[in-house]
Amino acid sequence: MVRKRFPDTHCSVARALNDVGDWWSLLVVKEAMLGTRRFVDFQQNLGIARNILCDRLTRLLENGVLVKQDVGEHGTRYEYRLTDKGRDLFTVITALRQWSDRWNGESDGPELVDRANGEPVRPVAVQSTDGRTLDVREVIYRDSSDTDSAAG
Amino acid sequence: MVRKRFPDTHCSVARALNDVGDWWSLLVVKEAMLGTRRFVDFQQNLGIARNILCDRLTRLLENGVLVKQDVGEHGTRYEYRLTDKGRDLFTVITALRQWSDRWNGESDGPELVDRANGEPVRPVAVQSTDGRTLDVREVIYRDSSDTDSAAG
DNA sequence: GCAATTCGGTTGCGTTTCGAAACCGTACCC
DNA sequence: GGGTACGGTTTCGAAACGCAACCGAATTGC
Image 1 (spheres, protein in one colour):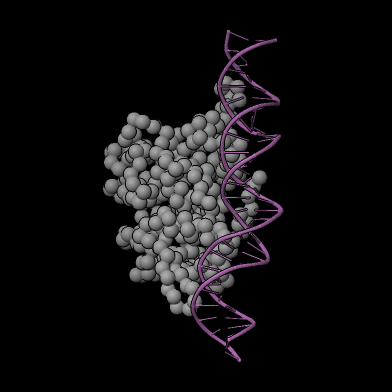
Image 2 (cartoon, protein in one colour; image 1 turned 180 degrees about the vertical axis):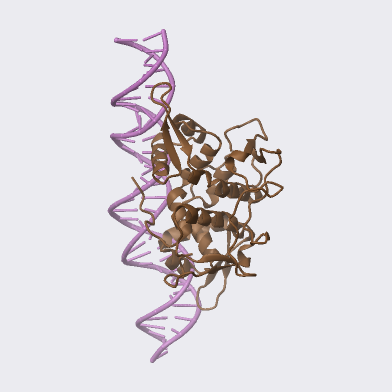
């Protein structure tokens, strides 16, 4: 049940979406960042169908975003935990969350604060080497190869 | 053909995915950031089916990510351009692109550089108020309401 | 004036994916 | 042995997807 999507594309964004581009995958990762590790907890907290959850977990394992650990406490127990690659999606998810809050109105969900001092985090932004925040019109997509200019 | 998905959810991430969460939407936005504005150009550059493109463009218009302008040069001509809301997805897309390049290997696609000086942009990151880069384990999802602790 | 072309779609139709609920197998508890 | 919790798998109807053909308006070529 593995999707073909774009098995080999020059576009980094499309390749990222191959890993986490469908509706549920990012939500599973987000849920994992909130501390959820058990199959039933993912299922209940997200309201996802069991078979779909099973498929997504399998694909996230295959893609190296999650790892599965047997914690055989009571009967069959597994934990799904984020890898470094999965934890690195924190930036993407936070950017998405902030974007939604800016343009679709604040949610009444939890607020993201710095554990060290309790202050909210900065808005995620693309920055230049000297720290300026860059708009899309202030950058250039410079071709590093001549083969495919639409690969962006 | 509008998806219901999660019409009203407390989760900001899920609400963001309602707007741009399916496979093609983010790629359409990415393509728009590369300068593409015409229906046929989106279709050819992305390799997307016409009806799917039509549906995605309509939904992106409805969600305020794109605007449609009649530029009646030759026959029926429209341009699809990013709104401020759409341009603000630059951060999300850049974070996704950098994540893919870090973990799935560099693509041979274009490189993102500062127009002002030609230098590559910084890695996108979640930062504290004093500029430290924050990992997911260095933050807390602090409930601002008591109604739904799983809304994250 | 008339055919061909371009653009922006829409329609049909077959395939893939999704989602809800029921079912399965193992391990624990008693 | 019965009951329960967990982690799936199966079944099946509904929705979404992708391809290709078609459509209507305006432009170009002659």
